[in-house]
Length: 226
Length: 241
Ligand SMILES: Nc1ncnc2c1ncn2[C@@H]1O[C@H](COP(=O)(O)OP(=O)(O)OP(=O)(O)O)[C@@H](O)[C@H]1O
Ligand SMILES: [Mg+2]
Image (cartoon, rainbow over all chains, first blue to last red; front, side):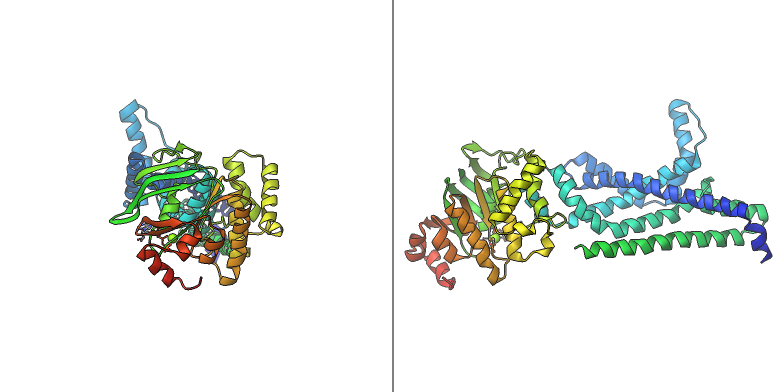
């Protein structure tokens, strides 16, 4: 009990809350960036043009076939090496920025499949009806297909956000100041890892359970409007 | 108005449409009948570019349609009504109707809504403008789909078995709307199993089998004096005349 009081001071709690805030930020930006990438590569995969299709396929396979930790390290440690070789320019990467980019690129590969299957699950009669009233492919996608795909995508999409929130902890290894890293810092400072790690556990659980709760509510609302 | 010349479309080994010549003139009501799998849907879908013909030509008002390019502009004034309605489930009835004119035709929203409401009135659904398709019965959905086709200011409307997915008691309301359109002089091409409708409303009936037009003529010629054995066999199997 003593350890809890000693470590979880208001000041340290604030430190960990700030870490949790960064974890959320990493997840939000990675999901947003990843969604743009995912939508583009889903379109490329379903499209008629060979080269974008190939690029999208390689992207998805490479990302899904390798560990995320490796991708983060490659971006963080490999980036400066590449710029040095190419431009004789060395920089110290910002861990949270580079980490978010790496997580976003990773997420894009997974959301590609989400978007692709959701778009393909929309009845092809919808495309046909849109064609007969004169809509272009782009208009059909925007007005007819994506809004319907969105409903189907929402549950797995929110799940992807939860996955990202947890995966953002991998950035602790490159020293980004997110939740797990904050726990690590406090652990080292007080020679007690158990208490900060338990606290981080609670924080992660509170965040993920809250999100799933609202996701389920939203899902029920959407199902009702069908 | 619409003219198909030597139209062919195969799926693998199956010749769904086999060298069909078809000319639909203004104001004409053409009914296409034939056994299941004879290629009726494929034929009518080719006329709106929903299937791309393998060979042959399609002319709309004398203008050849280039299927290698974008056909939406050239086919903009052809309406199409599907067997399964294909309404947009996330849009209201009114939005279903105005989407085409506003997004593709560049019509101002207010004006498109006025036209749409007038057309809903015409199919007897003025009170459903704000409803979603899921709140309508099958017959109402199909009447909305017809109103949506009318919003294209179509010169001709193509129907692919518009009543086949409906409960029997709803078939009449849809056929009545179609009959009214015919009476007002609208050009219609209708794939149908409703022989009673074809007999009363059609100017010309086309019998299709094996992807080919086997026989065509007035309803009297086709129903009362069939020439080919295939048509005789088909008519003998369709009991409810
Ligand atoms: N997309 C497709 N892929 C493969 N074969 C198809 C496809 N569409 C139609 N066919 C085949 O082409 C032939 C003609 O089909 P079509 O749907 O045009 O017939 P139909 O006269 O409309 O029949 P029904 O009265 O059952 O609607 C059939 O043998 C069918 O199996
Ligand atoms: Mg058919």
